[in-house]
Length: 318
Image (cartoon, rainbow, N blue to C red; front, side, top):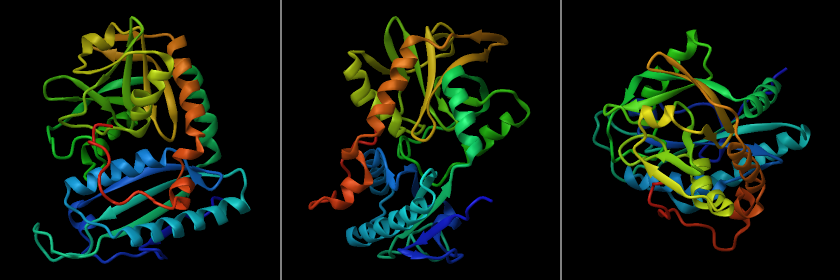
C-alpha cells in the first residue's frame, strides 16, 4: 500500500488552505520539486537560489526565520518517514505563494507568504522505468503547444504552468516519453519537464532560457560544474530543428530522473534517430556523483551557522 503524502503548511501538518490564497486564485507564487533520499535533499542550494530569484522577480517577501522553521519541520517529518522505510525515496514539492489576499489582481501589502511542503514517495515502478530510460534512451516528439515570451518569468518555476499541462496532454496518445516545446520563432526551448542538450563536434549546446522556459537545476549543474570537470565547452544559443536533426547526441536533464539520452524524434515527418553516445554516458556519471555532494544538501544549509538569507544569489539564468 502506498504511504500517504506528508503535507506541511506554514510549519504545521495540515491539508487545507484558505480559498482566497493567491496561489490558488492566480497562480501567484513559485515552487521547487526536489528529490529526497536518505532524509536529505541534494542540489538544495541550486533549488534554493532559483526559488529566491523567482520570489524577487514576483516581489514576494518571505520571513527568513519562518522559512528556516518550515524547512526544518518539513525535512524532519520526511526523515521520520524514511527512517521507518530506509529504502524509500521521494519528491518534496516546496510551494511559496503570496499568501491570502483580497479579490482582484492587486496584491495586498504586508500579507505573509504561504509556505507549503508536499512529500510523496516515489513508487517502485519509477525506478525500473527510469533506469530503463537512462540506459536505453527515450523517444520524443515536437509539441503543438508553444511557449510565449515572458522575460519576467523566464527561468523560474512559477505556479503558472498551463502551457506544460497542455503540452504534456498531447503525449497521451503517443509512444513518445517526452515532448519538445518551441517558441513562436520555432526555436527549441526545452522539454515539458526537462531541459535539452545537444552534442555536436564535442561541444554541448543548450537553448537560451532568457525569454521563456525553466532553467533546471540539473541544467545549471551541467553548465557550471560538470562541463568544466570534463573540459567541455557549453554554448547557450537559439536551437533550431535543423540543429536538432544534425546533432551527434541528444539528451534531457532533470533533477529527479537524471539524464535521459534521446534515441529518436519525429522532426518534419522524418524519424530522426541517435545512438546513446559516450558523451551522454559521461554526463550521466558526473551528474550522479555530484548529486551525492553533502555540501550541496539541505542538511548542510540547515546546520550552517550562517545560512543563506532570502535574497537572490543568482541571476535566474541557471
